[in-house]
Length: 243
Image 1 (cartoon, one colour):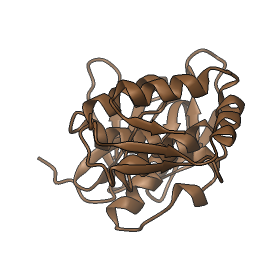
Image 2 (spheres, rainbow, N blue to C red):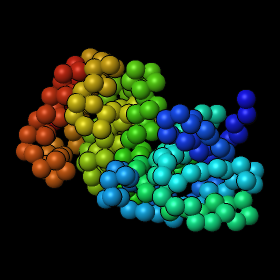
Image 3 (tube, one colour):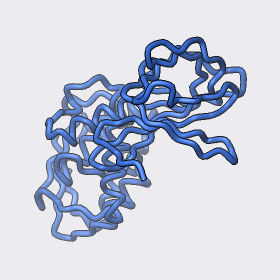
């Protein structure tokens, strides 16, 4: 069994009956975030470069699907799937190809890489495009324990100051309730589920400038009842709310 090394890329053939895999030093050219149907004729085609660990070891075939993972903290983290349309060239251990991307989320891997190296990054300082990836990583971490997490305090302050988007709001809630990397859902149903899993009737939530919070939730949802539904999700979990 081949030993997996930290930071190593793994390419898996996803076609039935093959199940082959190869290791790579680097993969370049993937879009930061993409979700399409690669074989529908509607997806964009990207130029990928895959640098082999051993020259000549990578035996990709055209008209096949492949997934890409990276070894982070000893585990394979899958972050892309592509359809190999055409292999252009193999030069010095590097394979160049045209690939239709079915799924790609390089941002998920960049965040996980930073976390694993102990680099304390802040979602507030990142582009809003990182929001979904941040939530996905926090969800994976929280889901490993059935959403059970430790509240940072029994008195939580909620404000909309500095928040830009729907994703910002849920990144903020996760951090406000459960601290750095905390997860509190990515929508109202998820929020209710996580809070119910961590029910604490001693918990008190105070809204700082409730009218501004109302306006912000209206802006990101387009729904005038979103604020009320947000309050209901908190109260359903036994949380005392101070407007």
